[in-house]
Length: 268
Image 1: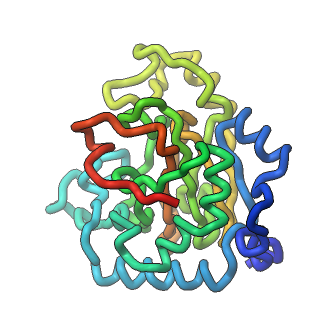
Image 2 (image 1 turned 90 degrees about the vertical axis):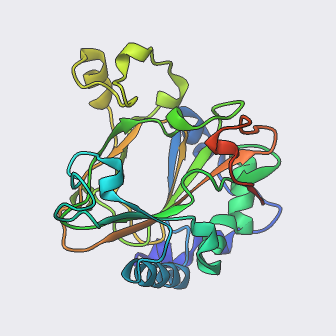
């Protein structure tokens, strides 16, 4: 692990002080994403990785399978070869204190007060999982905004992606298109599943501006729910584990009767 990760930015944070520098805040507002090096300490990373591996090995429910989503590279059904490949461990906040500590630490709470509002809540209906990108049958995810299937009064939520190992293009790390959280996209720029259409020149030009940050264990990536992002397949022999959680302000309520309102969120 890098020296920066060993330092653990979250552990070094002092209550009552800003988590982000003025430059970091400006970059997030401009780009809709921000990488924070060395957020989690080495022991926290090791504990979370050990728990995730054990729960994947035991197939601890609830799970989502690659075959369930049908993205490029996924097995065509649960009965096909590779059809039982796990895509993510669902309901991470209910999977043990190690994940609750990642998602709801005082430093995360302070960070979200800076980004989403004075009364941040940890969303349980969306994300709230450990992504398990496995070799062989992992799928690729095309360019999308997370808010496409979410239902809130305002499309103003922020997600936190925790790296438990190295994340690079080789094992299917995330790529982002900076600034897209501030853009409007007519429906005809999206396909039936609300992914960016690749047959449009304006979309291809936008995709050409994408960035692909390589992560080290302990790094944290923050991204706005309207920032377009994508991920490739895992071409390495090792599973990539990535806890991801989403946050909103208490004033930004989910719409009644929607999936977003199906589980009570956690106050930070």
